[in-house]
Length: 116
Image (cartoon, rainbow, N blue to C red; front, side, top):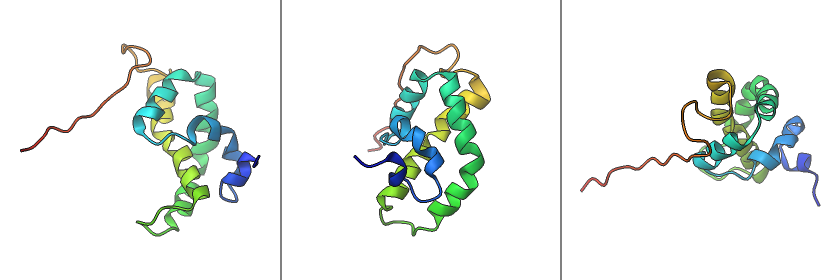
């Protein structure tokens, strides 16, 4: 079995502990549900590891052309960093994994009306 750190681009090995939680999630809804299932301690650990590296992560990902699929190490890094959109809300705004006054473990679906 391949070591998780070998799956990330060189220089981002310290983010390997978050692959299992965030690396396979493809949609915002999946990340939203995952955030609700994790402890604040785990969310804070992710935030503390990723937030200071955002500039380097974006610089690295921006070095690839727009359009073609990213190589798998970069695609994995991208999926891991997308979790920041959910985790930052819990850490910076809510102070808890769930949205205050909302049912726990709920999902959000955005539907675009059919414009005929």
